[in-house]
Image 1 (cartoon, rainbow, N blue to C red):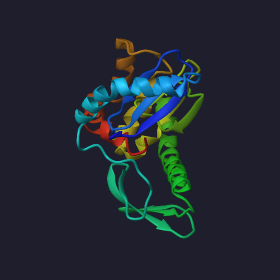
Image 2 (cartoon, one colour; image 1 turned 120 degrees about the vertical axis):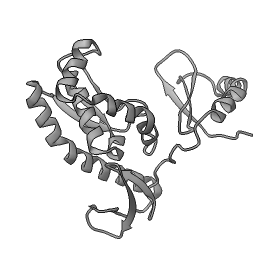
Image 3 (cartoon, rainbow, N blue to C red; image 1 turned 30 degrees about the vertical axis):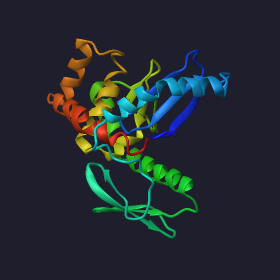
Amino acid sequence: MEDFTIERKPSKGRNISLVVYQNGKVVLKHPAKVPKKQLDEFLFEKREWILSKLKQLPKDIPKKLKFENEEKTHIFGNLTTIQLIPKGKCNLSGERIQIPKTKSEKSQIQKGKLVFRDLLLKKIEPMVQTTSFALNTEVAKISIKPMRSLWGSCNSKNQISLNLSLIHCPEQIIEYIILHEIAHTIEHNHSSKFWKIVESQNPNYKIAEKWLKDIGKKYIYYLN
């Protein structure tokens, strides 16, 4: 009956809600104790709304990565072909990346994400050190994980979370996101003072902002 797949996600909230993401994923968020019949009725009522939202989506959003042999993706801004190997270590060389093959589709995706995380962590560590020193501040912790809408975040404890999808972005974009989040360890807002801190290290930061808005929004869906 449905022309789309719905991911049902129990939440701590009190309300039932629907989200249609740019990559076509439809997520139903609901309290855990809501009966299935009530959820089905809610979806039936919202069916036309979902279809209209799906029709409005851009056509050039990348499909979610499955980490299959000869599958293509962007790594640090470069179009790269995935090559699965029987065993051994990951190797990124030129336009190819070698990733060990696993026994199932699920474990292959998990392995691929771990490989990407290690590559991204190795890339950002010197950036974090350099930027923290330049701004005379400290980052308490760095974590990398898939995010559906944010490229990064910084909490009140100066712990920074970065989107795993940064692996797809050019180096100068990654540098900007690092700068943006580390600036938040000084100013936990987007005030004029915050932007002056960013501009002090990257006078052309608006170029990166434009890239993220125009192009980066597509890259965020490879891993979501």
